[in-house]
Length: 123
Image 1 (cartoon, rainbow, N blue to C red):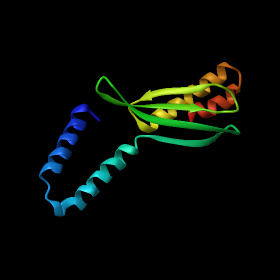
Image 2: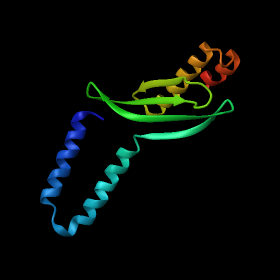
Image 3: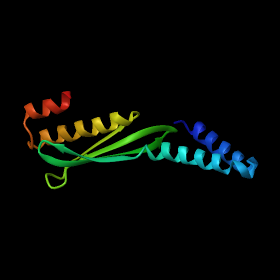
């Protein structure tokens, strides 16, 4: 989201708080809950099975030069200290690119074979 959109939402929320009559508090709470739900959905973490190892990925939003990016991180604790990183404008793209980065690093360190890397890089 652009900074102007976020600033506009904040201004609209402040104006609504100042001028909203008391009986509309329930609508205000529903609006705030909806906005917070959308914002909290930008952060995501999960665990996946990757080539027989339990691995984790994490995605978070980051503003850079007034543009929203999603930074992704993919790692497999207990297997190797490699960490795949990415920055993308797409939420799903950040996770995919972090996984690809991890696969490239694992291939360079000879942790996986070229054939098994190709399966993950094409998929």
